Image (cartoon, rainbow, N blue to C red; front, side):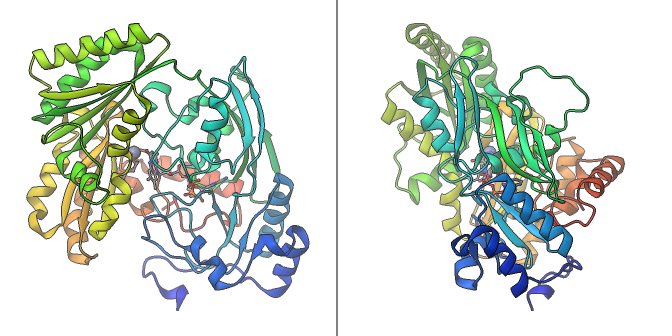
Length: 474
Ligand code: FAD
Ligand code: 2HG
Ligand code: ZN
């Protein structure tokens, strides 16, 4: 039975969706925005990496905060559990139902409300797709302060709810900094208007932060105000080949020193990660084979100045021998092709079979050690053990792929991977969140008192626990 699928998680004491509930939703949203048969709901029940599957028999597609408010007030009153969903690209199983929770999907809340060309403030609804926002802002010489491989599908509300990091966090910071305000609906249906567009506002507790990164457990984000940087006039991307991880670190140090304020990204790809995209996707690497590759990007406002800096950085890196080969470009199509080598690793890995994913923050010097450690521990029993990620943010993506999932391999990876991270005072979830897959590991990165305070906040904001149950909190 669906409700007995997990030994460690039992279905909560929630009501089951019935005809009278569906009638209420249909009266509120109309026929087309209430999906209530298994085949229509199927795609909304499976996550992007196909690692979890729910049994929701009801997907709702509100268009306004008022509709979200009426849905949640009704669900709270009738003890119906709810799973908020954006683009469903989350990587920790937070965005799909675990059992039969009602899925509230934000796809139709996709209006841009305003773009202020002087202050660079964008106000939009939560269901706007990140790439659409990027395209619209580009017309006004602005850009989004975050970018990730899932940009074509993920929603800004989902990004905020996961506090997504992405490829340029090193330069533009995380969403706790760039989100100026937001509107969210609490579990009881109350609409919280925190949609400030002010840069400075120290009037009391900064409540917006409760919704940034809480993965739909405290409310449904319906609108956002974001500070957007100007679109850079000058862009350069270099792709470098290196012999060792020590050389990667030396190169990072040099990049920070020589590129200074224009450094916008410093990403690592190891050889086995590159094989994923050259092999499965048929992408071409612009340089010959190395154990490590680094993608360095600059964004600035002066073409000649930026090129000078990038060239000087490359010259120094090659002269000292830390970088052995490399290519640099400012041509749009070539930059895109280089970025694809980094962005398409995640979907390529799925062709290996089942993928164990670990999204860790580690002290930068010990950043890659975890990959070598696992190669020794698991060796040929895995199809691939690779590491890539955001060197500039101390965030590695350790991926261990196997032909198919087995408990034996799982036991050889966990809890060791979390213990190791905890011993180094790292984070067991750098940017993807906790979702359904990791609540029981949160204690490796958070103290008991911190977890208890989170539980207290949850009780105050969602006393009946209807919002994303089984997720985040242990
Ligand atoms: P969903 O997957 O739909 O939901 C994610 C979580 O947020 C769920 O818990 C859901 O319940 C909740 N949620 C969604 N919308 C709302 C809302 N409006 N209100 C309240 N709760 C809500 N992440 C990074 O941090 N950095 C990366 O570089 C990165 N790259 C990625 C690349 C690929 C190819 C993929 C597939 C994923 C990547 N991710 C990355 C994962 C990342 O978390 C998501 O892509 C993105 O932030 C989630 O947005 P979404 O709209 O798809 O949210
Ligand atoms: C990235 O940086 C994403 O590409 C996904 O965060 C990481 O696939 C992963 O493990
Ligand atoms: Zn990442």
